[in-house]
Length: 460
Image (tube, rainbow, N blue to C red; front, side, top):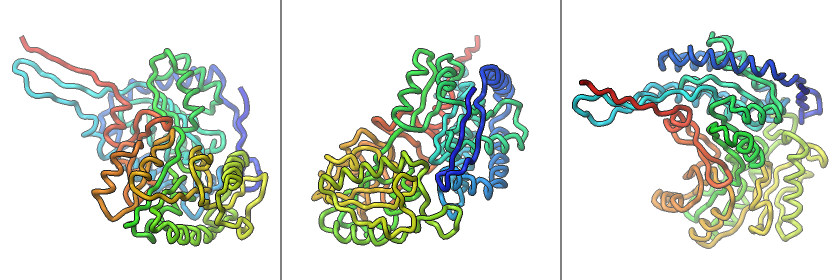
């Protein structure tokens, strides 16, 4: 066993210290989960879905404390109210479609036979959640997995270690079978051993590309199914016919919300040369209005990054871009908090960028965005596809047909028109290239968390 310590990026205080689970504790937890899962799988789908709605109410009751804890653990300002709005939307939607999504598939009639395909639970699902949106990324799998009849073990990130305890508290309140959902404090080596032993039937991981490769290596040869949401370098393309004020407002938020630490945050923007200068002017003016300060204060709109090492990556990418000829548009000195060798980092807007700079090709995951001038749709598409990542991409235009045509050419999991940085639970959440594999939410999410079992019953 070892200790996991969460240090706040806000002021360096120790937020939490927890012992990792030992070998015997892990074995007991998994045995209890297997027993509980067999009982739970016999509960009708509508009852399982109703239980998740009770879980949602239990989480709602804790949200004021959750919001403050998130600010302390990873720096998101309390003014945004935590993650409960989108959390509730996802729980409610997945519960609402469950009975239809999990219903047997019945083919055309065949005289003398009864035929159908049943969706059976996989069994035991391990969810490895990240720190940037610890509730939202976890709930994407936790709730549909349970509704589908699985047991779930949750491993949260060390930076947001308290989130797993909130999940556990809420599930304990609604009276699930003992052991069906368990929050376990695990280190990386513990997780690798669990996967290598084939102790789970499915693992969902959200994190870095390196982390995803480690998950795949650990599970190799066990036939455990793996779902991965990894890095991103999400692009936006602003066409000449876009409503610029709308594009500016939404893209500033898409780039800098959560200090840029969003899986589908906008990290590079391509703008038609005819509107480029006006777009940059509006974008930088709005960016300067952020208030970088204590996230526990309601007036704060931008908090620190989750750790100094993450801020240093952004600083290094920005410095390299400037050295290669990029221009900065934001003076960090105009912000109350921007301090070297700390997680406190002001937002930055760069122009004069190109794909010879890391800030336009490597994941930044912080408050910096490069804006590049383009001459045509074809050039924008080529540049948007010039990436090893592909989670989301947005097109800003008043021409629906153009957005659909451009979206059809972009190598990405989700195409947006006139919006960004949003996850619709009715649509599959998926990525391409190094961004990952598998899909979450929507009807397809249930398919990922169940296995087909065919019945061919012939009467003689």
